[in-house]
Length: 415
Image (cartoon, rainbow, N blue to C red; front, side):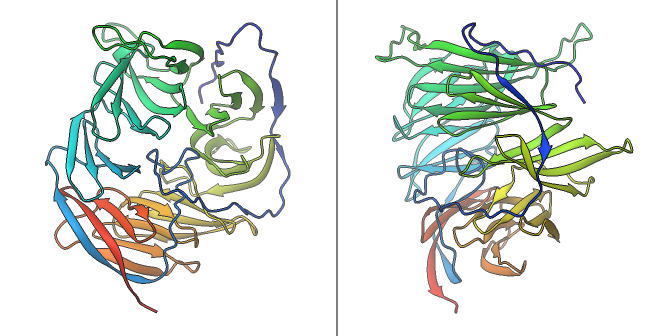
C-alpha cells in the first residue's frame, strides 16, 4: 500500500473538510432506485455513476440482425458510446463516428484514453497523443478546439467528464525517468471552465479556459465518479467527497487500496478494495459505504481475481461484480454471493431495468436471470465479441466484434 500522504491543492478560502473514520453498521437495505429513461451512454460504464445501468427492458425475444458494418482491422474495438442518434466506436488509438443506420461520418486518432460525450453542447472529448484534450462535434465529428491539460503527454488522461461549461480531467503519470530512479506514483484531477463566450486562437487552442482547481495525489490507485453535483474520489486509505469545483468537503478514512468504484442514485459508494487483514494476509473486499462513513456491507471476495470493472448495480438489491470470465452475483439483503464462470472472457455488459445482466462472452450475447440461468439473445458465427452490448432504444442494440459493428432489433417474443 502506498503509505505516502495525498497532497490536496485547494483554494485558500476553503474550510477544513470533515474527516470521518469508516465505521461498520451492517444491516439489510433495499436498492430502490428508478431505472433511467434516457438511453444515452455517455461513458464506457454507460453513465456518469459508472453502475452500467441501461433503460432497456430485456424480456425474452428473438433478436434479428438489422445491419453490419466492417471496421478497419487496426481499430481493435473496446467500447461503444451512444447519444443523440450518434454512435462512437473506439479502441486504444482510433475512434469512428456513425449514425444509427451504420453510416461512417468521421474518424480520428486517440491517445490511449476514454471518450466522454457532453449532451449539453453536442460534443465529445478525448485526449490525443500529445496529451491535449480534443473537442469534436458529435453530429459530424468536426474539430472544435484543443485544450491544454496538466503535464502534457507525460500523463495519460484516464478519464474525462463534463458538466455544462466545466470539464474534469483525471490524469495519471505514464512516463518514468529513463535516466533516474523515479517511479510513476502521481495523479492529478483538474477542473476547467471552458469559458463563455469561448475564445480560440489561430492554432485552435481554447484560450478562454480557466483552471478552477486541482487535486494532486501521490498514487496511481485513483478512481473517480462525478454525479454532476459532486465528485467522489477513491484513493489509498481515503474517500474524498468534493463539490463541483473540487473543493473537498468530506474525507472518509480507512486502510485500503481501491480497485474500482460505482455509485447508486442515492449516492451510496460501491467499492472493491484490497486490504490487509488482522492476520497480515492480503484480502479483496466488496464494501458499500454511505457518505456519512457507514460501511453497511462488507464482504470478502476470492482474492485470486482481477476486478477491473466498477460494480454493476441492479434495482432489486442485486449487485454484479465482473472478474475476467467470472460473474459474482451479490444479494445485498442477505449478504451472500454466488459465482458463475464462463468459458470465455467477457466483452462487456449492462444491467436492464428488469434486473437482467446482459453480457457478451465469446460468440454469444445473453442475459442472466435471477437464478443465474442464461437467456439467449444472439451469437456470431466466426468471430468473438470485443465490446459489450449498448441499447440505443428498447428494441435495438449495437455491439462490436473485432471486425465489424453490428445492429440488432427485437423480434418475436419467445414466451
